[in-house]
Length: 287
Image (tube, rainbow, N blue to C red; front, side):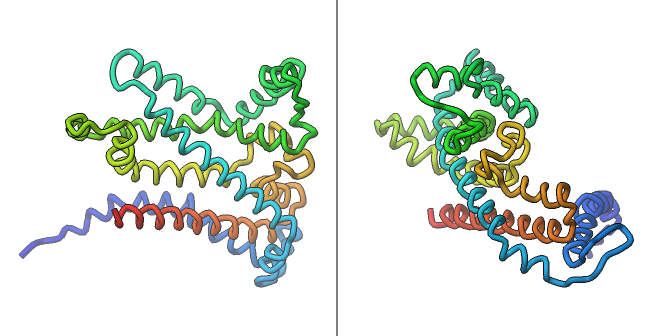
């Protein structure tokens, strides 16, 4: 008869305690706030689902949600293919490998607020490298007053900052492919496209799943970079959901509506991430 030692659960107990204090208790606090109208720490009234109904009817929040989806899907459409191309272009051996890895890691080491400051300077038309170049080419560029320029600048900034992550993930996936696959492809005289289509891309599916989910979640919660670069403007062009939530909670001290909004925000991220995961794993099962 096999004897089970339940004392091993004591080893897992610290993890449960950590999760409770870092996730479960704050989440339940937000749920509690979302059903109350809070005037001050000692004055609050139960309002039920009123804040949720107001959030769902708020046109300003719907516009911010559409901008957020447009930004996140634009980021995925650019960074995922670009990261794959960069990973395929990297050397497999020699001195070039550590050099490429170091260069790709540098943007990831820069704090988010510094990234916004860097591109704030780069985009300036008088002293910035990017802004001055466009002006010399005869392009009237001003990210502070032109909505298209502001949107494109935020996109380029995020691509510059995070494509390295996708490239590093894809490169690790490519390095894990056994050489026997490439040897068989050379024997069959397969083209570079055939090698990518039938060997590299299928082996990268799990890595790409991680890259897509990480980049979607991070881009959907973006706040610091566009806030430092454009302040959310011009107008509300680059005001995304996280900045709208911050303005509601901190600027207006509307804690109840902000708590309800944050829960809806959280559920949207979970839902879209689950859809990505289901679609990609379903495609993997069909193969």
